[in-house]
Amino acid sequence: MPHPDADDVPDDDAPDAPRFRDKPVSFVRRSGRMSDGQERAWAALSPHYLLDVERAAAVTSIRPGDPVDLTAVYGRSAPLVVEIGSGQGHAIVHAAGATPEADFLAVEVFRAGLARTMLDADRAGIDNLRLVEANAPEVLEHLLPAASVDEIWIFFPDPWHKNKHTKRRLVAPGFPAVAARALKPGGRLRLATDWEDYALQMREVMTAATEFAPGFEGAWAPRFEGRIMTAFERKGLAKGRDIRDLVYVRRDGA
Image (cartoon, rainbow, N blue to C red; front, side, top):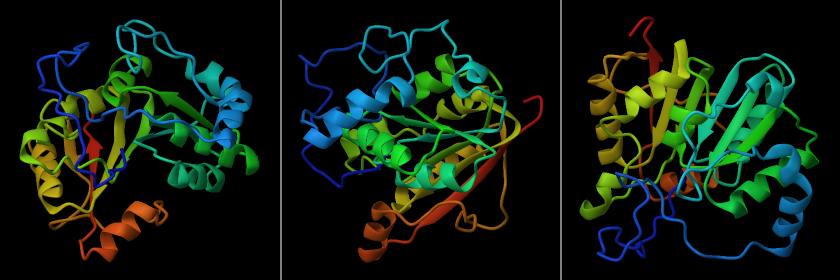
């Protein structure tokens, strides 16, 4: 999910830290209140836009064995794009509006961002977008039916740049298999980051993943034309960082 460039991240290795999962997650849910407008948007719009899911132990978990019926959710059968870490929803709301023939699912754990996404989607009259408040790997593994997704987008995820936190990175060994389960054969995993060492890690992890083939030639993929310029990308460019794109194709029968 979009990274805050923040250093005040709680250490999940603290002995009194609660444990609901067997490995670190790629986010920390910081406390904080939504604005009055966001609270109103949540109350008014979440019954329509937000998926009601069965939880396991953690508030952002997905209970295994309860996959969603996508045809019932969207009222049709259409290509599905899933954005992991949708933030305030700028990219996915724009994409959903520009591509009415496809369906979109925003995966995010921060309620303020989800509320903003719903508000912007409602103002734009967008009805091919739904949201889920959940840990992304559990969405891919438990919520979505196998081979149901056409594209997964992960744009500017938290780089967890401190050495003690890099284990939290989402794109790491083990993640390709989870993504491959949700993707259709021929489906695409699109990645972008402004952190060089994370880009190198992404490429190394995905190169080793037998479920995927690179969808580009050379060192890096061209910038994805379907991604609008967001504040996170502008911030990276303003700091002199190169934006690196990658795209991988789900192998048939892998």
